[in-house]
Each structure stands twice: as C-alpha cells, then as structure tokens.
Image (cartoon, rainbow, N blue to C red):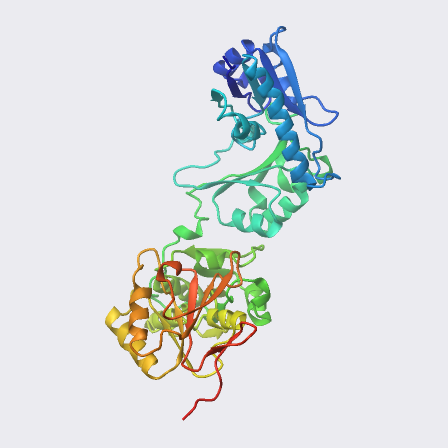
Length: 504
C-alpha cells in the first residue's frame, strides 16, 4: 500500500500557533519534507522542530533560485518547473514505499504556499489530506491590533509583485487590503499606497509572531531593512465613509451652491490600448479629482494621489451621469469616462439627458472625442467604411426590436455599409440571426462581413466572412460587425474596402 500525503500548515512563526491536528500528524510522520532557500535554513522546519520525531526521514527541498536570475533555457519559470518535478519525484518514492509524508508549509498550505505545486503533482495519485494553518496576515493583524475588515468591508489580498499602476488601482478600489511578498518590492508598494491615497493608514508588520517582530507605519519604514517575511495592512472601516461606491447619488440642490460649478468632462478612452488614448483625454484625466464610469472603463484610468474613483455597473448610465453632474455642480473636477468615443453609444448622451434637470443648469459639459470601436475594427480590416455607412446597435434595452428591424431594412435598402454595435449579450442570443435574415431580404448572401472581437485588447481576432456564411453562434458581446455594401470588396491581400464612388 502507498503512504498518505499530508500538506500541513505550521502557521506564521510562533510554534504555539501550530494546530493540534498539525502537531499530531507531524509527530507521527514517516517522512517530514520542507522547502528552503539556497544556503538558508527552512523556516517551516524551525517552527515545527520540536515536533519532528527522531525516527522521521527529513527531505529538504532546496529552491535552485529565488531571485529570478538563472541561465536555465526556460528561464525562472522553467527552472522552477523542473525543481517541482524533481521534488515531487522524491516525495513520490517515499509514498510508493508505503511511507506517510508530511510536507510542512509556512502559514497555510493553500495561501501563496509552495505546497500547492506538490499538490498539483501528487494529489491525484495518492491519498491526500490538507491541514490549514494560521496565515501570516492573520498574525500580522493581531500584531497591529486593528480590525482588518468589518461589516460590509471588502478585503483584497495583493502580491507586491503586481505592476505598480495595477497595485495602486486595486488599493484605491478596496476597503481593506493585505499586501504580501515585500522585500525588494517595498519601494513600489509604498509609491502605490501613496498614489492610492492609502499611505497614511497603512501598517507595516515584519516577522509577525516571530523573534524580531516589528510594527510601524509604512511611511516610516526604511526600504533597505525590509525582509521577505513582512507585509502591509490597510485596514477598512465601513463607518468612515471612505467607500465611494456607497456614496448616495446627489439630489437636486435645494439651495444655490456656495461656489461656481466646475466644468464636467466626458472622455472617450478609445477601444482599449493606452496608445489609442488621445493626448487631450490623457491630460484631462491627469487633472481631475474624480472619475465616474462603468467599472472596466474606470479601471483603465491610472490611479494617483488625490483621485477618487466611482465605478458602477453596466445599466445605470443616468445614475452615473447624475453623480458626476452633482459633483461638478458642487465645484469638484470630474471626468465621466466611456470606452471608444463617448458620443457613440457612450456616456455623452446620458450626461446631456440627465443635465436637462434644472438642478444642473449651471454645470458646463465638454465632450472629448476618442477612437471609436468601429474605427478600430475598420482599420484592422482595411477600409470597409470608406464610403457612406451607417452605425446601429442591436441592443433593445432602450428601443423596441420592431424599431431595430425597420432601421435594418432602411439601411439595407439604401445599400449602406453597416457597423453593428452590441450584436449579442448573455441575455440576447438570437438577435444576430434575426438581423442577418432581415439584411438578406435586401442583400446578396456573398455580401462581405467583418467580425472584429476585442480589437486592441487581449484576445483580439478579426474574421472576414459573408452574410450568407455568418455564424451567429460565433458572435458575442465582445464583437463588432461591419456588413459591407454591395460594392464592398476583398483585395488580393485580404484587405476589405468599400469604394468611395457608387455606380449610378
């Protein structure tokens, strides 16, 4: 019979924080394994040392590298993959011989632990049990003696190895945070905390529950003294009013504002890549104190000190517009953001609709253009909208399907190239097929169709097909379609273009 494999968490450092179950399994193990750095003693073994029986075989799994520098042909990832395979083979040999193996893990085995890589390789082959341990951040919170999250606060755990702008964005958008994996990343983490406006209340904890334990404000930490066994806590408190997403929407003013209203900017961010953001839009976003918009679009605005982000869902455009107008009415500098061009199925129309309320009569609004999705897809394909063209949305959330059908027929009868936004969604799965049938009433089956998916973003694809061969099942919410006119053609190089001239 084969032995049993145990992943055992030994807690953050203090041997008294080892659970009773973990202690029992360690004391009864045939083999005790643990990870260690090159030339370093294993911290996990140090924690559990008094429990390891003298009869146990010890397997130290020594990392070949810890800094990322290696001459391995597969780089850092490749050398670690080989190491994990070799380590798994060493443990498997004991298990095949009928020996029970306990693999020690600092903190909890399934929380940023090396145990997971052994689990991936051994758990399907051997009977496996995992014993949770006290994670480092729980010990650090006890050291800081401050509630980490309460009531409806959202806690986010972040690795300090994230790119600095991404780390700043996530710190700004959460109530409470734990930042792990410090060491050499500390300077960037500190800058991210400052950019997110969270530095003042961030607490640094070093070697929680171990000898040499240290706690102090992040702002007072010398980066040269930060070891790997340290983390940052940003405590949350739903009572403090910091959470912008819980901010009530402003009501029409009962009295005149104390000062003049600020200009409200409505900014098109383009379809995705930062290089498609215009210099005008970039400069505007760098100068405002508030950004309002749909969550994924707000995420594209770099976090910086003094910036408050107001992200919301996909179907509350008027509420977003009122929030932005209310802030601007009160003298705050605000930008409302949209993907693509804000004036093309974007937030600009929603802002002007909400601005008809007399409460916002004194708020000036300026729209900054952006690269539209139809421009991006058309450029990738060639010039399919090089002649007259129309733009439509298939979404029937704000207009009935009967209106959409009537407009589709009018465009088809006029022989215009047609860009189709919002062709499908999770709840609208049949409208592409219905639109295709309407267009085929007036267009030949060999009419050129371009299907652009996530153009400018990860997972981009572009397909050229025909109206007759268009597969509605292959179209989703990330797509934009361009249906050519009768004169639209595909060149020998595969470029799609529509002539500027039309035969009489």
